[in-house]
Amino acid sequence: MRSAWSMAAVTFILKRLLENTLIEQAGSAGLGEVLVTALPPDRIALGTEERPQLNLYLYRLTPDSSWRQSPAPARAGSADSEPGEAGRQLLALKFHYLLSSYGERDGQGELLLGLAIDCLQQAALLSGERLQGLLQALSADGSGRARANVLARLVSAAPLQELRIRPEFLGMEEQTRLWSAWQAHARLAMTYEVTALLKEAAPTPEARPGRRMSAGDKYNPGQPS
Image 1 (cartoon, one colour):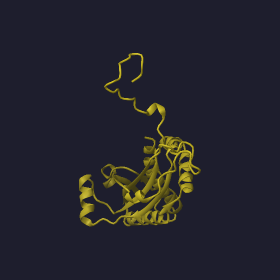
Image 2 (cartoon, helix red, strand yellow):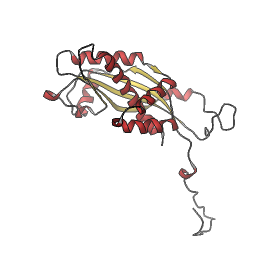
Image 3 (cartoon, helix red, strand yellow):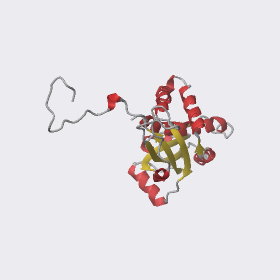
Image 4 (cartoon, one colour):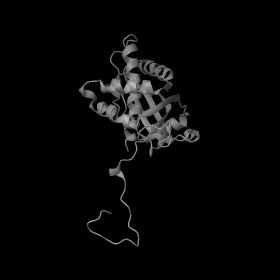
């Protein structure tokens, strides 16, 4: 399932957007070096080891039923179909993220989260061109981005069509349940819902399952099943 790479790409893209914002503004805001991660909250260093940090954690996936009203993909051989379009399926998902901020000094967490909220608000709708540009930027990074390089190459097989980012406001009780489930210390946080449309790659002949034998078939050891 090549669209699995596209699912991973959503987190990589959001993380890159946040990193770009911090590179541009963290210095002038007096924050110094800020770490952006995508880890479960219970793996974030706290206490004396706590540092300025943003953490973007994907904690839930749900289907996006709104895409059911969208037109079906073009059939193979039609004027508007693309090569290899036949057999492709559309997978519409909602990604639910917890964006939390950390700091070693008073006000750092609030300032970091404010910068992050402003960044994601400005990027509320990402088009295909900008998505590809962000992926190309990931692939241009150094050796420390080896996994992102693989992601950038494979994501073209199941391209992201569009990303929509919007705040998802949870009540105190819901947030408390989340932090308790992760057995993590609660920090200032914001939740987001990101909708994405993924296009699954057409199945290859090698991936097709073999034909099942019927009751009337005769067994031939030299014949593939």
